[in-house]
Image 1 (cartoon, rainbow, N blue to C red):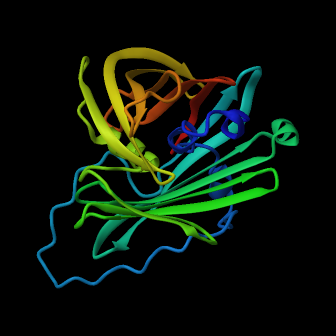
Image 2 (cartoon, rainbow, N blue to C red):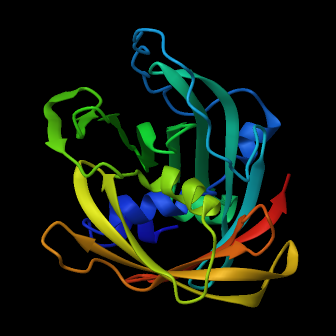
Length: 281
C-alpha cells in the first residue's frame, strides 16, 4: 500500500481507484459507522415524468460484499480490501446503484505507513454510467476529499476538491466516460471473449485517461477463496497526451455468471501489488 503514497503522481489517480476496488470495507461490514467525511451528494434533479426505461441486466446485487487480501513487495498481506454495493436508490431523476470501497493496511504496515482510502460512486441503473464519484484519502496527517459529478446531457464533468474553491474544473468528456470504481463494476456486465480488445475513457482527479483492455483466457487462478477459472483483462493506461502511464496491470474476472473480480496485479515503481479475493458474499 505504501506505493500509493510514493508512485508517479500522474499514475496515482486511476490506479488508486482500481485498488480501492477492495481496500477494506471490512469495517463497513462490521459496523454501520463510516470513517472519513461523508461527501456531499448533490440533490437529485426532478425532470418531467416520463416512461421508466428498462434497467440493464447486472450480475451484482444489493448487499454484495467482496473482501480481498492485499500484498505488496515483501509483505505477504499488507492490507485488507473490500467493496460493497450498499443500495439501489432514486438519484438525479433516475435510479442508481450506490457502491463504496475502502482500503487500509494491516496493523503492522500501518505503523510504518498510516494510510486510509475511501471511494464512493453512483452508477445509473439503465446506462450503467457513473453519475457521481468521490475519493477520500488519509496519508499520515494529510487528508484529501475530491468529487466528480457527470452531466450526461451536456457531456461535461464537474470536479472539485473539498475546501479548495480554486480547484474547481468543468471540462468536456466523451459520452461513455466512467470513473475507476464504476468501471470495475460495469466490466462485469460484458460478454468475455478471448482476443477481445476495447477502450474506455476514464476521468479521475480532474484528468482524462484512456484505458485499453485486452482479454484472454479463461485460465486457472488461485486466490485465498480457492482455485477457479477466470478471464484475464490486461490494461494499458494513457493520458490525454497519449503517453502511457504506469506499468503492467491486469484484472481477472471469474468465468461464472457473476464475473467477480478475483485478482488484480499491478507493477509499480515501488514494487508489485496484488489484490486477491478472500471472501465473496
